[in-house]
Amino acid sequence: MTPRLPPLPDLEWSAPDGRESAAPRAGGDVYFSRDGGLAETQAVFLAGCDLPAAWRGRDRFAIGELGFGSGLNALATWALWRRTRDPGAVLHFTSIEHAPMRAEDAQRAHAAFPELAALSAALIARWPVRAYGAHRLWFDDDGFCLTVLVADAARALDGLRGAMDAWFLDGFSPALNPEMWSAPVLRRVADLSVPDASVATYSVAGAVRRGLAEAGFKVARKPGFGRKRERLEARRDAMAQARPHTLYPYAPSLGRDAVIIGGGIAAAALAHALARRGVAATLVTRGSALGDGASGNPAALVMPRLDRGDTPDAALHRAAYLYALDLYRELGVLDACGVTETPQSADDRAALKDLLRDPPLPDAALRAAAEGALHPQAGLVDPAGLLAALSGRATLVANADVTGLAREAGRWRLLGADGETLASADRVILANGPGLSLFAQTDFLPLAAVRGQIEWGPLQGAPLRCAIADGAYAAPFDQGVLFGATHDPTALTDRPAPDGDARARNLAQLAALAPDIATRIDPAALRSRASVRATTPDRAPIAGLCPDAPAWRARFAGLAQGRALDLSEPAPAHEGLYLLGGLGSRGFTLAPLLADRVASELCGEPQALPNACLDAIHPARFLARALKRGL
Image (tube, rainbow, N blue to C red; front, side):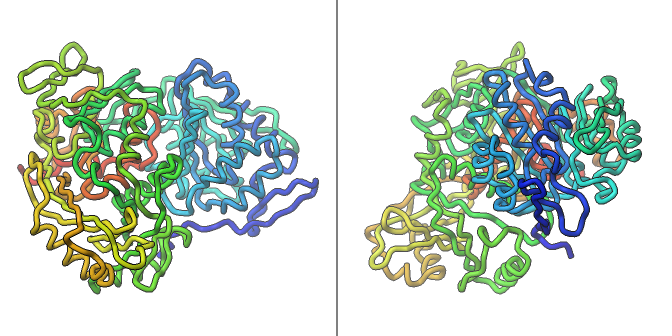
C-alpha cells in the first residue's frame, strides 16, 4: 500500500565552488547546475521560452513545470515577473513534484543565490506542506500565483485543467526518471498547452525530442549552458486539434466586473478571489450587512476532514483546509488554538488510529493525542472580521432581495419581488446559501436545509486552551466557551430563532464530549444563535458553471439508455452564471479554495483542484445522476 505521505528526497550536499548544491543520494543528477543554477534557469528556461517578451501586454500568463525541486525556477521566474509585469497582470506558475523538499533544505539550497533572498524568504515562510495534492499560494503584491501539485507527473497531468503558455521541463534526467519524460506525459503536456505554446528543457535525449515532435511540437536544438553542449526549445503547432468536451460545462467569462449574490463566507471569499485578479465585484446581499446564516456566528471552527481513502472528496477537503490555513494566516484572522479530535464510536476510533499510523499530513499538522488526534494548526476565526477583510474591495448593495434572474442582450438582470431591476452584470455568481436553488435556472439542485444552533458563555475555573470536536464541538471563545451545534432538517426559506429544546440538546452533547467543561457552565448565562446551512445529498459542495437544465437533459438523454454521447460541442449552460454553495457546516474551511476554483474558471486560468474533484463538485452532476436513474 502506498504511504499517505509523499516521499522525502534523501539529499547529498556538496560545495565544490563554495556554493552548496544538492543531489539525491541514490541518483547521479543534481537539482541545479554546479556551473551556476540561477544562470542556467535564466538561459535554459526563461530565455528558452522567450520571457519576458512573451508575457508583455498580457493580463494573464500561465507556466507549467515538471520538477519543482528546490523552487529555484519559480523564484527566478517570479523575480523576472515582478520587474517586467504589466500593471495588474497575473502570472500562474504550476509545478509538479513527487518528492517535495523540506523547507529547511530548500532554504539551504537558496542560500547560494543571495540575489533571490527576499523572494526565497517569502516562499520559505509559506513552503508547501508535505502532503499529496494541490498547494496554491498567492503573492498578491506581485500578482504571482504558485501552485505546487504533489504527485507523480502522469497522475498530476491527467488531473490538471488549464492551458499553459509555456512549459519548463526540469525533471531529473530521462535516464534516471524515464516516467516523467515518457510519450504519454509529453502528449498530455501538449493537451494542456495553448496553440503556439513554448517548451524549454536542458535535455536533448532522443526520446524527448521524438516525444515532443509526436505530441505536436516543433523542436529545435539550441546552444547549451555550462558543460551541456545543447538544449531544446519547442513550439506547439498553432493548428493543434481541439480536445473533446465533457458532460459538465466549463467555460471562462472574461471581463472586468461581476456581481455576487450572497452575504456569507462563500460570497466574501469570491469577492476576495476576484479582487486579486483585478475583477471588480459587487456583493448583493439580502441583509443590511455581511454575515448571512452561519457566517454571522460569533466564531467559526476551521479544522480538517481527513479520510483514509484516496478519493476526490478526500483530496478536496485536504487541499481546502491547507489553502484556508494559508489565507487566514496571511490575513491575520486565525487563532490557531488547536483542535483535539475525540471520536466516541469504536468505528471512528479505529479509523482515526489508522490515519495516525499512516497520516496524510505531517507531524506539524496532525499528531496523536491521549484522547484521539490533535490538529495543532487548526483553530477559530472571527467571521465578522474575516468577512470584512475578504470583501474590503467589493461594492456592497445591501437590503436587496433578489427573487429572479433574466438574461437579456448578453447581460444578467437581477430582479426584485416586483420585477424591478436591482442590478445588472455580464457575469453573476450565486453564493446565497439556502437560496441557491430558488431561481428558475437552479431549481434542479437537490439542496436540503439544516437548522443549527450554537451556545456560548462564561466558563468557571481554568480556561479552555484547545478546541475539542467529534461532530459536536467546544472551543475557547471570549474568555469562555462556544459549543454546539444541532443539526435539524428545516425549510430552505426558514429564518430560525433559538429555542430551549436545541439548547438542551447542545448541553447534552457537551456533557458527552467534555464532561468537565459541561459542569463549569451556567446555562442561565448562555447566549444562543440559530441559522440555516445548505447541504447536498452526497454532502459534497457545489461549484462551477450553471448548466441549462432543460437543454442539458435533452442533449444527454442517451445517458438513461447508456448510449454514446456527442461531446463535440460544449454542454449546455447559462453563459456567465456560476454557482458556489452547499458547503454545509464546513463553509469557513471550504469556501476560500472553492471561490478560487470559480474565479479561476471565470478568468480562464489553470485550476488547482484536479479534474476528479472538479467533476465531484460540479452542479451538473445531479442532472447526470438523475438521468442514469431514469428520473
